[in-house]
Structures are given as C-alpha cells and as structure tokens.
Length: 173
Image 1 (cartoon, one colour):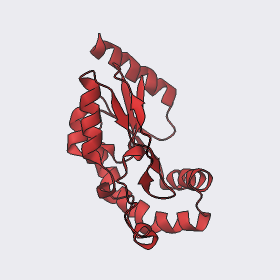
Image 2 (cartoon, one colour):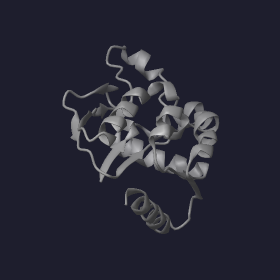
Image 3 (tube, one colour):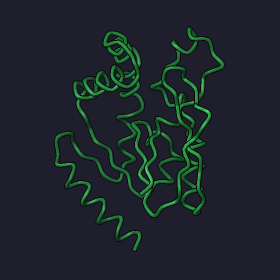
C-alpha cells in the first residue's frame, strides 16, 4: 500500500514574510496544491512513481528532498479537505468521511500542533476559533456528501476498515 497525506501538499510560502505567512488561512482549500496531488494520483494509477513534497510547517515551505512514492494497487490518501475538490473526488475509487465532534477535532488539533508543530495551546485555540471551525462548516462538513461511506465518530473503525478492504479486494480482483 502507498500512503499519501494531503498535508504534504500545502502550497510553499517561503517567499512571504513571517507576518504574511502568519495571516494565511491554512484551513481554506486555496492553501493546498490540489492540482499536484491529482497529478500524482494519476501518475501512480498509470504505474509511475512520483515525488511527494515534504512540507515544513515551521517555515511554511517545502523541503528540498521530496519522498519517492511507488505505484501500488492500493493508495491511501488522508486529509480533511480531500472531498472539497471535485477533481480529487473523481480520482478516488472509495472514500470514507468520519464525522468527528468539534471537541474531538479541537483536542486532536491541540495535541498535534503543540507536539509536532511547536505551537502554543493559545495559538491553536485562537486559530481554531478564527479559521478552523469556520472552514470546517464551510468546506469540510459539506464535502461529506461526496464520500462513498460516512461514519460517525465512535464507531468501530476497525470494522469499517474490514468492510473497505473487502470492497477494495472486489474492485482490484
């Protein structure tokens, strides 16, 4: 299996000043390079390897050494805004949307951003109120309608994975 994170496809902003980067809404679909991800998914489907960018969240730029990804019958792509892009939806054979309550989304973001991205709890809370929650309502939640399967938070995700694997086996042959 090949695994891709949509977080690797944020647009590089190293050309902007720190103040300008701090004002970018990273929760808006415009912050992601969906065209590059679509191109990579098509290349992988055609049996060709791709070079996935590596995004540095501290500088909001791409690192110089991308990660090679090999084609595989199963390519797993994760990202909260995936289904907000029609061209991406068209490249996916199956998609799963997990409805998580706001308090869960907030606690997970605090844990991730303080541990992995060096941010303060206060900055995460501010960003959540100013951009994350509004963009979730505007783009993420409506995109659930494009999912092959929708599940509520708290369901047995292992059982859902078993169902998806069975469906993939039928599709792949």
